[in-house]
Length: 319
Ligand code: BDR
Ligand code: CA
Image 1 (tube, protein in one colour):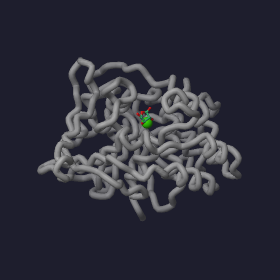
Image 2 (cartoon, protein in one colour):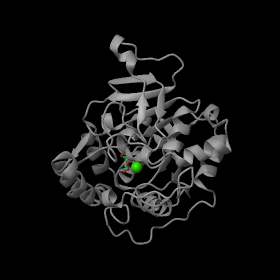
Image 3 (cartoon, rainbow, N blue to C red):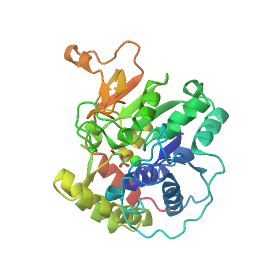
Image 4 (cartoon, helix red, strand yellow):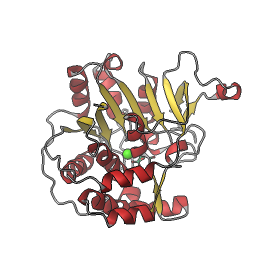
């Protein structure tokens, strides 16, 4: 068994792809799914998550819990429906998915799952970090109990994607991001520096659309709207692979070509830098990739060929 993963997500087109990627790996055990506002409301993200499980033939087999609809400080943020569609899955009609939701809140499910299996559960966050921050408040000993943490978010040396400084998952809740990135656990941050360089092309999407696998066909369908949004960002119909890259790093499928273990601070001010992840990468000038006392590994370079593996894996996935 490669990894036991609890994924906290704001499903969301690329969260859905990341989830399918993990569900298609028989060596990964998904022990829980928790949802947060961000791309869409936490409630809609939970419904979308149930749909993804159903598409993968795993309906009712993984607990799904709804989490925060507001930031750690109680703010309602604008959702990213212009990126992911009004229903978060590119406007694709998903009907009423099978399966029921956990009576626990997302943070409660995170804490109870990790406590039941100390040292085993890897937390993967692909939405704003609010649920993780709430879980840390509920269980300050959480860092001693997890196997590790991987998050999609931030921008180390690259520009942001919501503002010039801020990446979406951090922008939606900078205070939560600061709490999670400064907690005393080993955490790997997969920022825009690398996710924007892992691009899935329209040719690859069309290959999935023509696949005999219903999972790949579903992926191609939900990606269509997202690709239209990214046409403006990348200059051609395609998309970045944000959340699936974090998933692949979390389970060891992608080993970074370059990363640095450094201190990371989130700008929680109200100026133009709000939501920026300030990574102390100054050591790179003298080749020092490990800063004393730091516990945040920032991924700075990957191979850029993840999309081909995603397409192959989903096209061969017959639930
Ligand atoms: C992140 O923001 C969301 O829109 C995506 O799902 C991804 O997690 C990229 O900045
Ligand atoms: Ca996401």
